[in-house]
Image 1 (cartoon, rainbow over the protein chains, first blue to last red):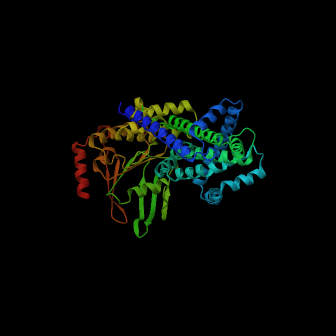
Image 2 (tube, one colour; image 1 turned 90 degrees about the vertical axis):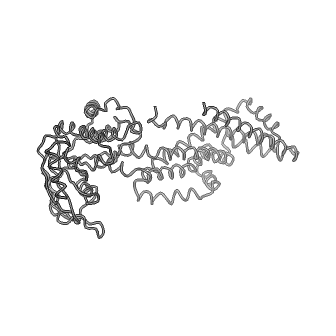
Image 3 (cartoon, each protein chain N blue to C red; image 1 turned 180 degrees about the horizontal axis):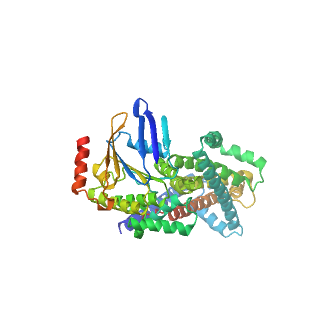
Length: 255
Length: 233
């Protein structure tokens, strides 16, 4: 009962804050009064409404979604498996650590430009999404492994449990909380860098190219509308992912 | 028989064992009784291979060991059943055999009805019973017990000791049991080695020939042994 009151209160606050910022946006656009600089919420949502009914809108949206998902999944598979190996082997950690630090500190634009030389434009956003998410997943996996309870490892060693079963039975479960929160962060970043890479690589059917076209043809309302699409998609993904994670990792000790 | 000859172990300047000797007969429950910090757990750690000795010989030591720890060391994300399954997977490949083994030992410690529970849902005593069942379910030649009843109230301790004795009567394996509680030693051990000093030496040996099932701490004979141990301390 108390929880449901708190939840409905939270929802009201979220709605009120949304209305507040829409009003701020409306007032700012009225003050500036140049649609090119800051389109009004009305013209932005009108553009968004028109876009939704365009024949290729959903194709564009789903193509961009598929790029994010593929890039994100590859980074998760690589990040977790590499992270586990580096977490339990000091030599591998020393070998991979400079590479990961280099990825972390290199500007994303440099990678996009390099990737444009290496890959077809369709694959550049996937590669960039994967590359940018990788250090987050890798670092979280290593942190999780370092937090593994040594007493459990000692127990499994005394009972001669095989390395494979130690990895699946102890390491995997210990790192899950770290990896799941890193995945949520990586997913948000994945959306940003994928769209950025789409802007520069201009693959067919992409949100990025729509943003670029809107900028080129000075259609600010459309530019804002596509940005809203990205924000909404990113939020939906985060919500869905959190839901899946909470279902998958729900602590089984509570019936 | 396990023979420890001339064992040496130092931690920095702290000389724990110097030319330490001990013989352990097969199928016996040996209790090492001594004050906290005297080196009892260090001896278990050396014998189980967790730490290396500085010198000496250990003969007849099997690689197949099981362990009951002071803290239960159960995996919190696994049920009671899966906790035991985790350590048996590599030894008993057949799933049905594994299931029979797990259920047999859980039944002896009276936890079969709780096999799908998670450690978080169990009391401290129940968790320790799971860890005792786990140690027996694992086929080993020697069982190490490092103060597994520490910090538990007397009633609970009695229940756990009874569970342990039931299991041991089913499968009489060599047990090396470390404690500083005389009552625990009196209820379980065949032989009590009293450890003292630094470097630690065997100060005395007390043998108990009363069947474990019949032992009660209020028994005159156990009280006599207890008084004897106190006089030797």
